[in-house]
Length: 120
Image 1: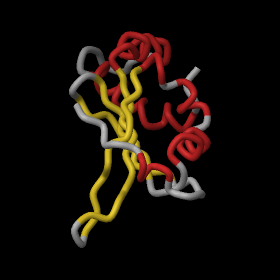
Image 2: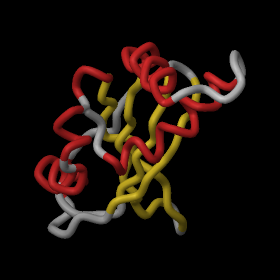
Image 3: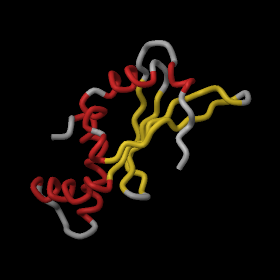
């Protein structure tokens, strides 16, 4: 199962894809569509950092569908445990398509500063 917070972000994308092919999709059809796109989903974890009198988002990690369960179940704990505190932006993607974004602010020292930026 997908936690409610994540489903709220993914559902509009899933529904829109399905509605492009059929009118008024059923709840079962929506879940089937989610199952079909799930292998192509990923999450990019970024943190806001000061940069040259402004801010930028440093990319820390990309989690593929099979890797994101621990993050989805406890996003703030996942971020705090691995990267420390800060202002994080999480972007969901399906292949090359942007799906949704969510911000998190776990407390703690900013250990993310020691991490290299993700190269893609």
